[in-house]
Length: 334
Image 1: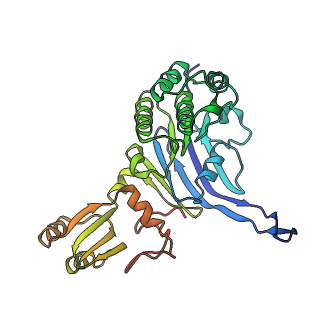
Image 2 (image 1 turned 90 degrees about the vertical axis):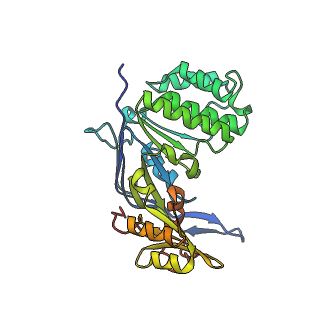
């Protein structure tokens, strides 16, 4: 059986609303609790055959979004479509699609009271592209015992087991939802390297939900940024890495260079000011900055995430922006 090609995943004007429910009050009387909107007007795409980082603060809606891809829930409104290019379908109750979509969380979908090798047999039955030899190689790499029960493994070993399942299944759409949080740093970086190596040899679509942006951004070819249930941006990662520029130096010189620019953040420390602005500097501005003793830097994806999801209650300093506002000149998908 030939492996399926990498899947595309698309969200078209998707909304997820949690219904009203009941809770018990302090006086022992049940009361009705208002529902909430988890996702609102979500329109974006996870391109086939690429690694996309799904970023956002806690509670932004990342896990809800990923549960839609795996058909764990249906959207309240809009369409979620997955599949090979030219054959995108709703995954809900579509066994052919859901067997090709794998969402891996930190603990993994494992048989807790069985030995790890029993979980491997379970995946071999469910996942058409499961590679048992590669799975054993990964267990050796991560030093996870094959003949122990999953329930007795440490948190770090359970995370490594979950990562192993995600890699060895080689699903056309593989989603890692903070799977590496329990790992120590050496194991996390071994996982990143293994992912890149196997992705190059066995192309598929990979989505990584991550809070460890500084560590994982080197993996990303695309980025989807969520903030409070909305897509702030969905763009190629290389376009974003040069989007935010920092200027650090004497206050007057920094203010002169920042004049007329979209200032995302400003910090003062005595006579020194550091501002973060949208967009790169021209060659002339770069020369002027060097002559004035102003240092130019780039924030990277983590800095971009921080500035674009900064709460309006926290403030952004003089000239700062409103939380979640899309960057100027780009489609916001909101």
